[in-house]
Image (cartoon, rainbow, N blue to C red):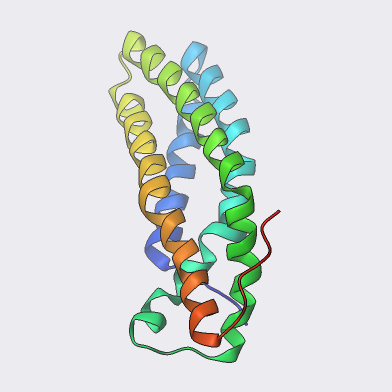
Length: 155
């Protein structure tokens, strides 16, 4: 079964990517810091798109009580997310530090749109940490419980 990332989350990531692309073209210190940030963010976004966001595509079905045996495949994603969560949170800390440097440089350069982007992306990271990642993990827990699947062995 394919698990689709909810459209609003896909669109938000696309918008953030586009704003980051624009920031990399700013030139000078701001552009260089934006390029460094892009290097940090790309592998992180790929990981999110692979394991953290697809389980959220099941939220609507689960809230309606719809659970099918095919949904068991999501457990591979949510188990991997749980295992990789400490590393993903560490990546967020590194990304936020880079965002703070970008925001400061953008303020010095009078680039208010890049300052706003950096603040937006920092808020996005908090939303992922406090809402999206926990919700994705809960999807796995609900699917596991409703299908009577055993919990994975803890390493």
